[in-house]
Length: 77
Ligand code: FES
Image (tube, rainbow, N blue to C red; front, side):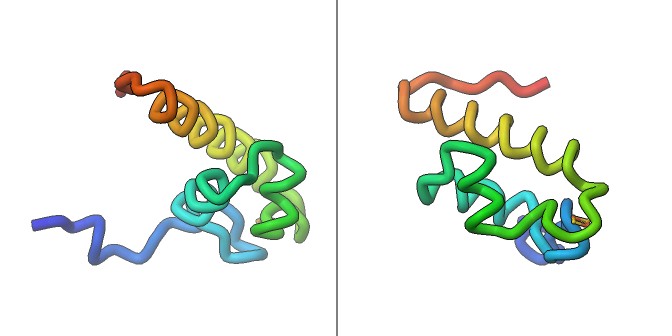
């Protein structure tokens, strides 16, 4: 059973309701810079306390996408 499919996605940015999945989808949809990600999702534009977490998620998702495009396996730790 896929429990993740039944769970409400964890919000990285509470002010704008942006989840990790939203960030992944924005990156896949062409947000290749942090500015573009913010324009698409509005993450970090409220109180700003989520900046570090959102930026880290953006970097990870961008690297995953680059690895997938290069046909490489990503390492999971
Ligand atoms: S939690 Fe993201 S801007 Fe406030």
